Length: 50
Image (cartoon, rainbow, N blue to C red; front, side):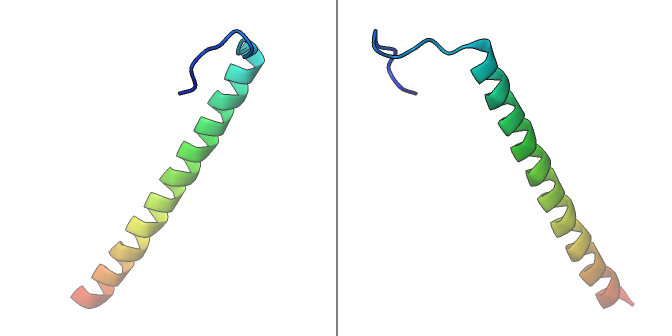
């Protein structure tokens, strides 16, 4: 975190919304990645069991 100085402009609500959107996108991307990883591992496991 950056120290809040007098020169720094205040973080506006719009900036906060942008940050929230980016975080949501990142989390969605991560979930998709984890799901794909689990799906691949599951497929390999099923193939080995057969």
